[in-house]
Length: 335
Figure 1 (cartoon, rainbow, N blue to C red):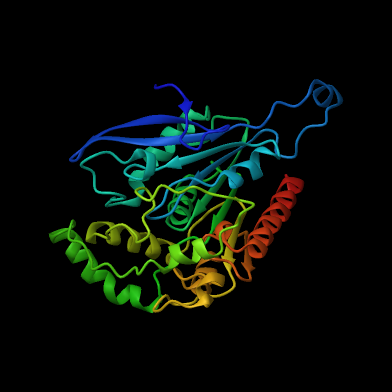
Figure 2 (cartoon, rainbow, N blue to C red):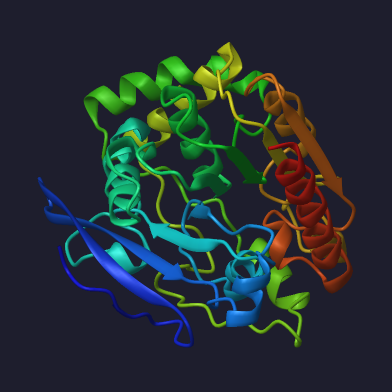
């Protein structure tokens, strides 16, 4: 296995390249980024004053047309004693190689290889269950869908699942059943045919409008373009298949926390409303779909939040972190 090397984020972040073999576009890798908590002082160790999340690992998976860059999110966990890991999936971000179709996958279950390699590199063993450390899965948008499906297929592997605006249902849910057969046929015949680009860049603009000078972030525009990456028929079929599985009901045995904006505003034209709402997902549909993930689901609706609640305006962002902290403390107390 390759060695851990300094990450592009600098500071306390390191990255590890995970070899995933070869596909029709060449060598495939995923990239694991880590940030570790500070070692407790000798006095703290001697007095038994352990951090809240000592003995916890967090694995984060990004969304569509995205990668990991949120330093503060990592530090939320490491400041509480957890080891934080973020996975740039194959053909995204740090893992994108020349000649590859960005973000393309024909079956979300293929990501089991990426997640399995990450858990192994984290020292958790095959399947992530050969460890006495607790595991929290943390996913945003498409990453939330991917991790939800993974957790349902791997009962007992995760101790908690936290989802930041997970893409659990197609935009305007009734349309999914109508378009799914058409997309499936297109995926079989011409999987690499791209759909027309309909993203006008308003979500990126909204993030820029509400950027917090006290929580600055540098974003690689190649890895996270202002307009989303091209959508292909094969990829869309994989997403719709995931939505269908959620609609049928998953079996996540761990407690689940879902963080969502309080409202959705369609991005048909620019307005200030887009700086205080989710303009990507219909959040009411996501809230309903979340209740099908498992027997223990908490849904937190955050007024003024963007699609990525941790990139929202300062007040909503602080609310999101406060709610996350409250849920994590309750989860920890119940263990």
